[in-house]
Image (cartoon, rainbow, N blue to C red):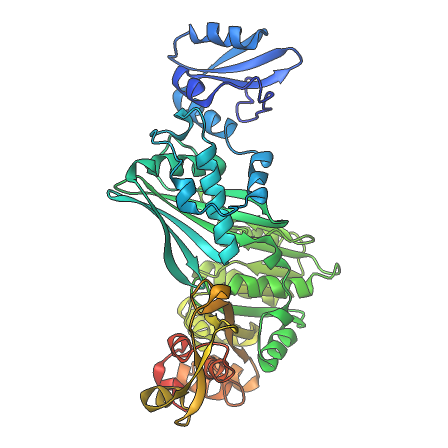
Length: 504
């Protein structure tokens, strides 16, 4: 086992030691080779524990001492949820038993696996994930406070409390999630990131887990990533014909830069992946640098940023440019170095797709200039910019028509008496009035006039004036969705770049 401490070939579950015994006595059955076992023993542990192990196994074994931190990591990895346990979530059905009912069965032990039966905790976590997936939640928040443990879910962009439990179960729940995500359960001082893969109702899900130490315990946020979303096509994004045509036309270019911009959680990655899917026809070498890789895509080489070992966006981009790519996707352009490499890549015959964080499409041009990209280089390489937001989609089963008048009609630029819709709430939408979210898009295709404006340092107002002369900006796109009855007036106004732009 020497030199191979991170490789575990789990023994038969019938031969595995109970977690609490392995942790407290500092012994771990690492693997079985024929009729001989390999045992890791924490330095300083009582050797008499080996006598119990010998009686338990009734087999010969080899022992290797490991230091405390290494043992804790091995312990966490060894007892992490394997594929069969993960699959339990796929068969999870509440069958009339709510989360509150399941939560009542949770043991009060500080360490989850001290309990002789941790099934209630596993059942609760599976139930939480299943309920989140059923409601279409993007994130699950596990929040420990002195007064209790709160579970909230972000559904259609809004956080809602779903469950409240006594404070003593915080350690139980958090530790089980950390075990499932293969995190170090002994480390509670620093943030950790992990992943859980499972099948739910025949659908493949990735759950991205992030922990953060706080006063009461550790906060956990689980982001639910539907692997099927990676296969969505541009036609299903809900773009207008004009926006769709601009992006499709830009994707057909042999080189240049295409930027997608918007706030966190606005669907930028989904749009990029849809673009990559369109390009992924087997005739191109497509490589990405992402932080993190959210969805695995067959036929595309994906690299995850790892700052701890120096693999930044810039370093990863340099490396993949030596891999003979045709198309390069950078998860985000964050700094001058990455921006300059992206520009140089586009100048040498590569099509580069990436995101930036700005409020609108014109702001992306300003952001690139702020990162000291030379105006003439930006003008010659930029092909298109797509800006997007997400708004909540009205439930078609219970939406209620109202007449817009007064200040509401004025903000929307509608005539008094124009029929719009508001949310009501029914069983189809869990009484929220909304079912899912839809995208609001604006697009800029860089033409000769815009190239001159960018090259000459034109301000945002002049660029926007030309860019949206014959196509909708975010405000116009939002108004269109309100007119169609797909979202509320309040949602449309909320995502507009400036409320003054909503005036007709």
